[in-house]
Image (cartoon, rainbow, N blue to C red; front, side, top):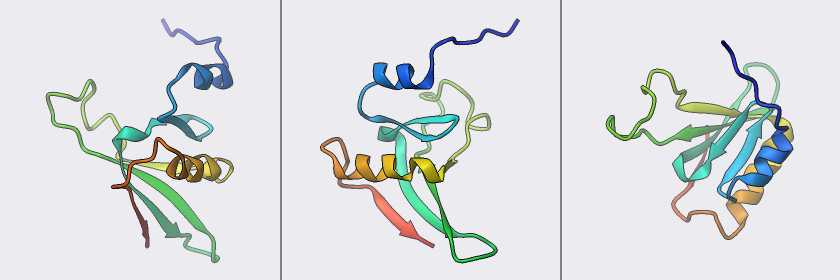
Length: 101
């Protein structure tokens, strides 16, 4: 039987530590596991899309199999500012790389 959460995303985000950010309508990411932020050109037009690449975890540390968890997560256009703010605030890690492909 499926269970649903009646908590809104806004209330959920308020309860999480600062290193969790919303990057898409349906994605919340612990930025401690962010490896790289990349930008890719769209096939048509001049716009670019951002993606967060997650670090690969050792097999024994992963709660779910690596096949179930995507390594590359899209950043929604409305949420790009969240990523930029995180990178500029005191919780940002100096080893993040931004790759523009």
